[in-house]
Image (cartoon, rainbow, N blue to C red; front, side):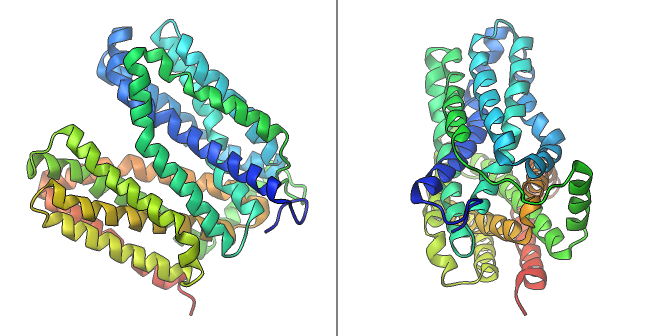
Length: 392
């Protein structure tokens, strides 16, 4: 293990990992805890459902526009210089949403909260890579991935339950970010050793974008999130509704099995990374993904779809942490935050394009072709792994 100060104590490592998990929890909280109360906000502020959904769009928009500049600043100024104010901004603006008197004020506060979440999304894995390396790195990122999956599964229930009593109660949750800000304030975090201005950091990013392996890893991120938001989050609900006649509650219950698979395998990723190379783990994940989609196509009912969804969760629990580990290991330490910022932007592009693209495929050729397209993407990802990741 390594930190900026040399050989650390276990307490220091635990605080760094705690902050990484807090950043991940905050990112998920900003969307997942709010999603269930969109209809309630529409009624409360007398706006349409589409207008009410802007509370999600306005939260994510700053990350799409400003993630790369924030990553460059984190590499130039140090992690703490961005992480501490980001936790405080996320916590204060998010909690202030509970006291919004009108819809426009709520949207402004959500933009500010989303601005605070930018650095949290960039640095949650960056500070892990600053502290751990080697075979330990994918294990720690796997733990962080498990936290993300658990939060994705439980936050809608927590936010929905709080909003049942009063919509304002769900916006009290971000106050936890203020506590994390104080922990970050007293935790030593990495600061790039070589002094460099923003222009030099931009040149470093330009060099990274000319590296074939880095481009391959970015392409893997894009394809991975297309596979997540396409066949599973877009086509599976259509399949469950049309072929299985399942209601929304049953579909949501089924999707929990995917999160369970991700959590289970992410917690065991350290064990697997000691026995298999990253390229082998990634190829196994693509095989599991294609098999899961094939089994979903032949599932006679919703309950038969649960094992394939679990298997899909396993494939993502292998794929995402290992890809992130390879990115962080390939990036120079002075550009890690910039690399993860680029990676985050690519994730969001995949998230945005997949539902539209796969909906068009399903509408034009049938739902089954959405799953066939997912299998084709798994094959494409395998080719990239064999070409650029597999060691000759």
